[in-house]
Image (cartoon, rainbow, N blue to C red; front, side, top):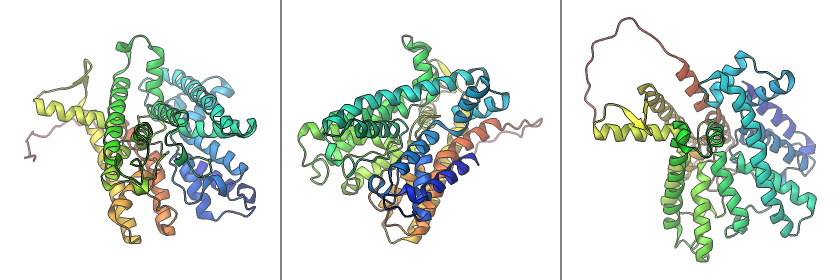
Amino acid sequence: MVFVGVIAVVTALLSLPIATTSGESAPFMDALFMATSAVCVTGLTIVDVATYWSTFGHVVIMFAIMVGGLGVMTLASILGLAVSRRIGLTQRMLAAQETKTTRLGEVGTLIRAVIVASLSLTAVLALVLIPRFLAMGQGLGSAAWNGWFLAVSIFNNAGIGIIPGGLYDYVGDWWMCLPIIVGTFIGALGFPVILSVATNLRQPRRWTLHAKLTLITSAGLFALGALLIGAFEWTNPATLGKLPVADRILGALTAGMTPRSSGFSTVDVGQMSEATWFMQDALMFVGGGSASTGGGIKVGTFAVMLLAIVAEARGDRDIEAFGRRIELTIVRLAIAVSFIGATFVGLATLALLVQTDLHLDVILFEVISAFATCGLSTGITADLPTSSHYVLVVLMFAGRTGTMTLAAALALRERRRVIRMPEERPIIG
């Protein structure tokens, strides 16, 4: 309900005449879609963000991204700390659900870490990007604003930029692309991982199991995505095929990272091959880490399911990783989150297929991008009918809040029964 309230406020602000460059009030759908995309840190848009919205509109969008990236209960906890210098028990419990912290005593520490990590990493990204905009001939004020906005969007995996023409001209620009790759990777790890690594930086053995699984799986998915996308697009003259070898490598690296939920693209996604689209579908559906600014079913969910498959293939009784045993309740939770996420995607895909005459491949790409709060698009977003825009709005909201709320609700729900039924094994496969 708080997310709905924040989206409503941002929609109202973007509906003001001052929010557009034309000085006229934006249509309701334009304001609602932009507000939902910003608060849910998605990046899908039906208007050109750089030219349609004014400076006031850009400021509203930037704050919406920051609120959505931090998380509503995390932000409320920050405000509580600022006012009373303490966090109440109820607020600790709600924030613990959102930040995936199992110990209530760690919530205050995690909230402070969120503040430091978010502002510090965003500031570092901005300090790297501002000189690049200065080198492009922009004034100090313009370069500082563009650098900060882009840094906020990168760290929060929002994929929303205010650079006219997008990032297509920077496909071979290491100064621009490297911060996108690094910032996206860190932002998609999740605050619990950042805290675990930061507190035990020189002792990796003391990192939590969640941190180890997230780091290794995220790095593996990035490497796999960059390698396959680079191979699929290496000779495509509409994307990487026309570029020098160094630019192709950088373009592949960027393309391998952005489906993790970033949404920034230095090549035209609409011109990519269907094999690349399918690869990006899979990467987007997995998304980022738990309690991160990324979307999808989460890296931890994917890692647990892989470990369960490996354990079953080996005939192991327990699911183990890094000297720790994973409870079967976690596996059941991972299956539930994955299945419900796939159900969201399936129903939305069916709805858009009925509402449009587009092919399944582009519809599925758009739907998964919305659910995974990624923001990549083949270019059909603005041309979809209004009814489809409403479907995407609901899907972006569900992708940002649905899996988080569902996981928290299922994890807290535990029904104990005195009587247990006799065991029997149904046939599987």
